[in-house]
Amino acid sequence: MNQIDLLNTTCPTLEEARKEMSRLLEERPSNYSLPQPLYNDPHMFRIDMEEVFQKEWLFVGMTSEIPAKGDYFTVEIGQNPVLVVRDADGDVQAFHNTCRHRGSRICQEHRGKVANLICPYHKWAYDLKGNLLFAGTEMGDAFDMKQHGLKKAHTKVGGGFIFICLAKEEPEGDFDDFLKTMDEYMEPYDVENTKLAVESNMYEQANWKLVIENNRECYHCHGGNHPELLNTLLEWDDTNDPRAPQEFLDQYARQSAEWEAENIPHERRDHGNNRNRVVRMPLQEGKKVMTLDGESGCKKMLGRIKNPHLGSMRILHLPNSWNHMQSDHFIVFRVLPISAQESIVTTKWFVHKDAVEGVDYDVERLRLVWDATNDQDRVLGEENQLGINSVGYEPGPYSETFEFGVINFLDWYSDTVQKNLKD
Ligand code: 3BY
Ligand code: FES
Ligand code: FE
Image (cartoon, rainbow, N blue to C red; front, side):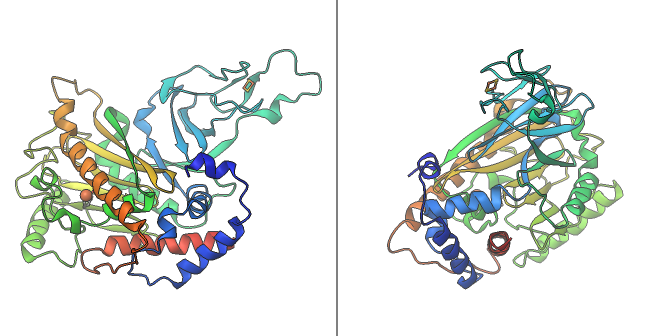
């Protein structure tokens, strides 16, 4: 059953599914993979959408994707189309992309530029702050334009990253502290002076949690799963990775001393008990960035950066992103669920806004390693899903040293769903 079927079905057992999901999460051992229905049951998927994707802060894109007034991009959070636009004051706004007349989607393109937001159906027009400007002449005297503005989604920006929240009330928590870290750690990159070089949208037949689980460990990096990536990436997931040998710690000490001298933030910051994490990690000795040979991806460095050897600053955000910030380009990743067993992984590569394609950078070269890596991870995720669907599947144990990131993710997920189900 796909998501459309699911959401169009009146489901007498949804309440039971909520109780069952609560029970499964409460009873699960924390360092085991989840029970099967949490990865493939359409009711449980619907609860994930309601309790996680419609309630929590989600990463949607970067401010430099919409540098000027009227620039917009669209994003689908399940069946909720959203448009993100730069308004006339230079602020980022997010609106439900549904017209207040009869609900048509307003912006139908993936990205574009508009003076006002005009619904294609009967041409109602809204300004960039969502106010209804024009509704024809036939709506009658009692019609109140002010009551028919676009519905807003909450929006917050930190370090050029745009987060939205579809809940009526913003979730409680220390999200603003994370945003402060983002402002501080992203300062050297000067995101406003970057541009999107290229974007990929990869369809994956796996539950969104399998996509995130896969990203939060490099256990699978062994055994030839990621030959291109491992030319440059070290398999340690964090500066305090329990597996990291002295050699790595020495390299980190050496490189982080350089970074400090250059005022490049690097120290691990953790927000919300491992929910959102920022840390700069060295790459393999001598490698500059995650290209195939580890040499520059773009001749123009980002922001005020002079040292090409900045490793990669990882920004891990739950529920839906991971990111790699390097000296001459950065890469952001966003996961959005489509159905219980389908997700879409969007990857975007950014370079300095004055960098010239074909002169300063070559798109094919820039994207090669992560295109290959994403595709390898897609196969791993899809195979994981197929095996989990078996009657023979039983939750299995995570390694606390190799898979601590997965344990952290599922602990956050489990706590969040249980808490939101009670609210
Ligand atoms: O580097 C990443 O984004 C993660 C961590 C390990 C494997 N994976 C591709
Ligand atoms: Fe938008 Fe009618 S649905 S103008
Ligand atoms: Fe991987």
